[in-house]
Image (tube, rainbow, N blue to C red; front, side, top):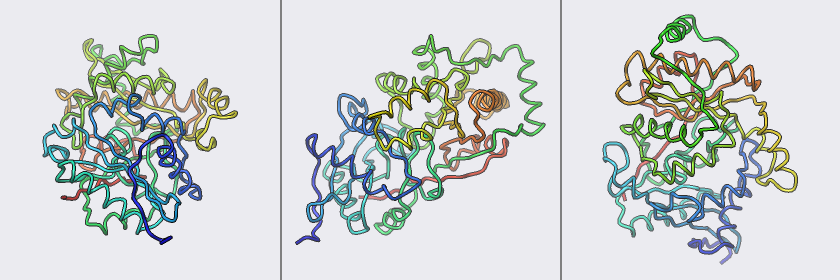
Amino acid sequence: MSDQIRIEAVSGKRELSAFIDCAYRLNASDPNWIAPLRSEMVELLTPGKNPFFEHARVQLFLARRGGEVVGRISAHIDELALGQPPEQGMGPGTGNWGLFEAVDETVGAALITRAEEWLREQGMTRILAPISMSVWEEPGLLVKGNDHPPTVMMGHDDVRYQGWIEALGYGRAKSLLTYELDITQKFPLLLQRIIASGERNEKIVIRKVDKSQFERDARIIMHILNDAWSDNWGFVPFTEKEIAYTGKKLKPLVFADLIMIAELEGEPVAFMMTLPDANEVIGGLDGSLLPFGWLKMLRWLRKPRVKTMRVPLMGVLKKLQSSRMASQLAFMMIEYIRRASVSEYGATRGEIGWILEDNKGMIAIAEAIESRVNREYVIYDKAL
């Protein structure tokens, strides 16, 4: 029958290409969806290129109806996540699905059911989803903020998906928030005083990333990140290969005055990473650098002029967290990057996140600089 849905496991380059193309076709009419570079998607989904596969089991599925691809989903198990404490969200028996796209609810339900079956066959007893594919990539389903395009390295989802997923018995496990603010405005007077006080403290040094020592500084940042985030819900540590891989991928977007490392008495204790919103240029390339997209991208990378700067990551060593010093260092880094973003890149807007809904420290910082929630992503939970 032409209306019968078939769910097929992806194997081979042809089916992988169909899996990738599915997202471009189903989202073509959404003006707020940013088409990722196809080459980036191929790399993400290819063992040997993406080090995630070295500690993960992954199966991709396609939905077909009448010979046409009408949806897709990934089912995957991160072995490092299985070793995390259960009270932090992951833990033994926890699998994931992600990269979800479907033309309608019936297709969506069939895909999710097949992903659940595969995870159950692999011995999993619980699902956290959607996570596409690592928690460090695009975790959660967008449930607020679908009315504007995402910034670089953030996901965007069809507004219908929330109802479809919740109808299958998925409950909310955690919300991830992003905050936006007008960075052309100075911060409140109290924060300016805190920043000025830090500048007078000879024990504090806020320095830019040194691109001539990029690997060294990337490792410093990842060391702080793994320590600072280690007690957070959903945390999975970066491996050495993932540190090198991430550094290589982010290097073209690294601008020294947008990434700060804070040192206290000579020890690196905090960092803040800011990226110019590459989606502002990628959005016009239709997923390809050919024939002339590479030239447009190259010109942009030489000196980006953007509306938005995104802060995807910041962290302070655990031994300083919840201290006044941690807040002071954060405000100093934010202020220095704010100034550079406006004066050197023409930015007018900042976006911070994602931030866990119960991360009181980060939320307090976001509120102190007078930002507001503009996007919410939900990670769902279901017992198998």
